[in-house]
Every structure is written in C-alpha cells, then in structure tokens.
Length: 265
Image (cartoon, rainbow, N blue to C red; front, top):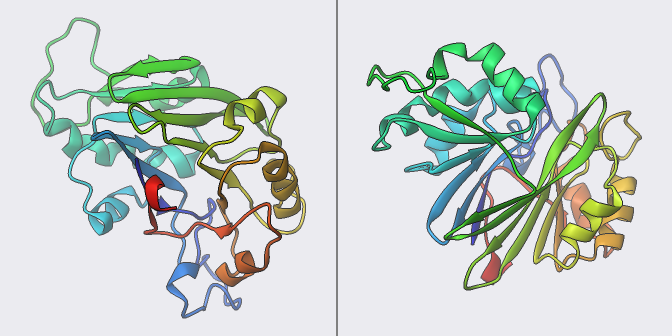
C-alpha cells in the first residue's frame, strides 16, 4: 500500500495570507503546506481522500494518473471545494461517473455545492466535460477486491468526520487516517489499534475547540499504539522541525509530497 500526502495543512494553508511569521516565510519546503488530503494506492486501486481548493495543483505535482474511488471525510470547505477538478478523472472512467463515498453531512454539502455533478436517477451520463458523482453512503465496512476500508465517526465541532482505516488484501498492511477531530472515541481507538501507520490530526501545541492539539494527539497516539504515528492538518507557526522533537508516541509531522510505502515506513 502506498500513501501519497497531497497536503498536510489547515484551512488557512501555509504560508497563510498576510502573515510573515517564521514558518510562513521559512525556506524549508516541508513548511509549505497546502490543505490536507491524501491519495492511497491499495493493490492498484487508486483512492482519493478529500479534494482541497489546491487539489488540481496537488494532483499535477504528484502526477496522479487516475482515481477509482473518492472518499469525503466531511463537508468543510478545505476538504470539498476541489471536487469540481475531479472532472478529468470522471472523463477517464468508462462510464464517466466517479463513485463518491461520504456521510449524510458530506452528501448534503456536495449536493448543495455541485448540483450539476449529480446525475438524475436512471439518466444517461452526457460526455460534456463536467464532473459526475455517484453519491454513496459510506458504510462502517466497505469490502473491495483490493482490500477493506472501515469508517468510524470522529467528533469535529458541530459535525462528525469519517475516520478511515485501510487494510490491503494479501499484504495485510493497515493504515488509519484520522484527520479533523477533537477526540478519538473508544470505538475509533480500537479500530486503529496496532495499525502499521496512523496519521492523526495534530493542529498546534495550544488547545483548539474542534481539533486535537499536539499534546492531545500524543496522548491518543500512545493509547492507540500504531507501529508508526505522524500528525497532519498542521497550523502555521508550527515548523516541521518541531515534529522531530516529539516524544516516542509519534515520529513527527507528515509533509506535502511525502510518499509512504507501508513495507518501507
């Protein structure tokens, strides 16, 4: 299983507009963070998780050739607004329609923002260059020939996001992706237990009302006990090198363009 980190930043991105802090002006390329999303290749199946406002640029940078499946963790702007740029990946599909798995909250947002991308039931799909989404409710366990994707709700302010755990058939590699959450409930903690790689929301050292702070994320990581843990959705003013000072519960920060092969973590 390969995980490609398209973006690892917050809704502001880094550099943040109108900010001249040390991180926003940093020469370290790992401090250049677009909004958080990942691309997972599981036994050849290409799965895109979220589409940020920079999605087109992220996909060009990482040379993403195709998308077979799209997962939306939640409907906040920094995770959904790039979905119009999925149109090219729809065109590349034989039927022109991309399966999109999401929660009820996510579906409501997609329908509100992209009504033109939702074909009417039974209608023929026109090859007109627009995005076309087959909206599906994400189950607790999605069985696929290439592996299994499990989902679990994570508290995030007034909504819940989808925490995702990927298990690849054959290799048995397990990857948990828990972005945008304030806590990790017991069921989510149990689901990610012993994963080969855990990527967890870790916004900043100071507390935040809807995101895990880095100390809170470290405490969750210690309880989950993944083989490796890295943090994402990192705020400006938190340099990448800060992640190298973290205690043993986590190995550091993910960064834009990082590629992880679970056989080589």
